[in-house]
Image 1 (cartoon, one colour):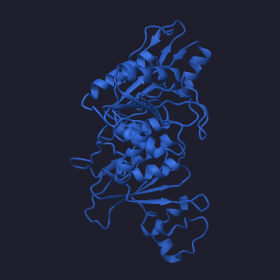
Image 2 (image 1 turned 60 degrees about the horizontal axis):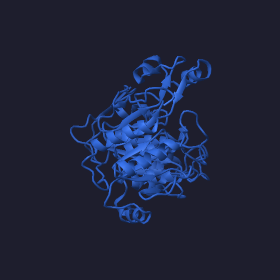
Image 3 (image 1 turned 90 degrees about the vertical axis):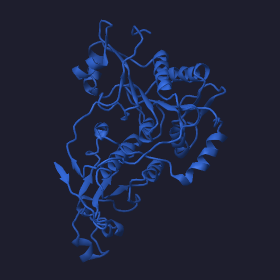
Image 4 (image 1 turned 180 degrees about the vertical axis):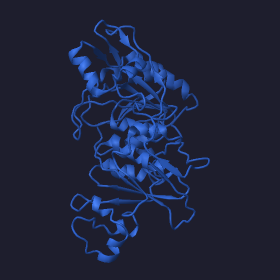
Length: 388
């Protein structure tokens, strides 16, 4: 399906409505980037974000999406946007505010013409697999009015503004809103070793973000733990924007690195090489090591060709065919950190965020389904044996 229209009438922009119907942080980040990237494909377009204020970070992400022209935020106690609410221009004109219960009762929805959009972006349509396809994926950014206060708070937590730092995050059970997940929950010990390596051998600081129920790390100079902070999303997000680079995993806030244009390593990948959890050219994907029943390591390209990044097939290999999966070791994490150190050698202190707008001629069209694009470099580094 293709949608193409050029509009140079500022009073008649191409109307895009994005339904950010999720409570998961990672998905919400993907949806905002996808919707903003579609908007940026047109010279004259308006983007409306619809969501509910059922998570703190959803309100924050909405404020960070400077590409959104309007938002419709409906509280849980009110009716939401039903399919019937995409009802053409006549319903509100005829009925006014005396709408039946099955229609959205938010007046702004109709007055802005969101009930009659040119493009509707549904959660299923905004696939994270397609983010690498956009030539210039949009960015999220910290609003200017918040920067000074957040910078002061980060310093108050112990981060030295004269030295660079790395943000680390990994998924660990205990987060109140999400259950434990096989293939995604990780042992914290390699990340403890990574933090020590960065501080002791690379000369950086380490800032951990996450949730309050994560395993406590040993206290030491140069390590700043923001994970225990309740309702600390703004400070976590600000730290990611100022980090020299981020070392994350398949965890919601780890995807914020790509979103704000901070060079990011997603470690312990098991998903498709087309979308390992980051999507920019300067990012890096580090996969878990998969070994067959004879102990032979299967390379990432081999895994991809055999379809082993499918969760069902991977589960069968591990449960029924004596394959083993090993999380990234401290040596592997350290090698990835050193590669990012080299790539970010011009960053000596806190990062100056760089989130430029779209450049060049915009295509003024949007075609789906989008093709998959192999974009993020794969770091196929591994220890020599599965027992390493």
